[in-house]
Length: 505
Image (cartoon, helix red, strand yellow):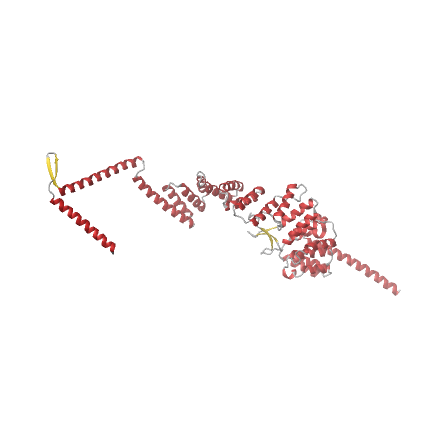
């Protein structure tokens, strides 16, 4: 309210001042005489002031028209002028609008529309960093890989967008299945951006697939230094890589370096079952049984596993069944209630022909976790205790349709593996295998074949056919024992009949 009143007062004051000045000029005598072409013009004071103002206005208009003419000539000549900047702003405005529309289309999943908008933005804007990136992503969404590759290659020429171009081409090569080229590009991308988590993971996976264990360990160290990986996860994965580099440790031609890597893998992650098994074999190859037993006990305490029991049997391959049961008590006392401990001890007691003890070792596994291995052991126990063939066959029939029990399962794709591997053979994920029960029940089982040295010793293991189930050997042994007992019974019965006949005589 006050501001409006003040503006009115100022306007009134200005009008009054102009009127007062005009009155003074009109009352002032004299003026200005101007002679033009022999004609004399006499202007009063007020007229002189008005003429001066019109002259100044005319000169200003003339200068502006002259400036416009010069700017037009420069514009036609291609020089930068206010006029060119005006038109450039219009083009820039249209270009950014097309770029915005293209990004919205890209976010909406309209690849073709985004590609059209990207082409329009490229025509209006002199900013290839943005337009080429939009073109590449839109072309990928639209399925035009050739155009996307061309856009990514253009991004390589600029230092600020080189990483984006390398990463884009790397992802294209991965989708095409060209892992060798993708590996090289991933190495270049990591050199440009060492802290980029996605590139780190991609390079690590590609190096693991290519079995470049040394390079993978270097990449893993880079992830740790950049803070992208917890130290406990780093230790486990480093152990997995060290273990993978020593997979040939059980071969006769295994080098000392391979055996040392297996031991190092176990040191880095004592609970990693394959690392513990290989480290124990490395110690056995060096004649260090005590070290091997120590490694196996520590791993068994973390997670009982058939492979650990297999290697524990290799420590004393020529021992008798009774001695083996006694020695395996060392492992059983570490995890007495674990399912794997019960199964191992049951199998050992079956071989030692102590069937009641084998039944006690199984406990409630038949009701709680009746997998193929448990049911087959029950068939062997029934056979050993002299049950009818119908009872044994009933247990074996249940075993045929029972789940296999714990296996090496990929946590990423749930693919089941016969043996542990650092990379999933189905989804190529790194370090995703864990020993667990699959959700989908399986019918066949190959778990028992790994336990064969526990029961029959090394000699029988070398003679066993591939794919044989250990409990089948148990059943065969029990059938032989049963036949021998039947023969003894027949002999004793014959002798008793002979004695009776002599008594009657």
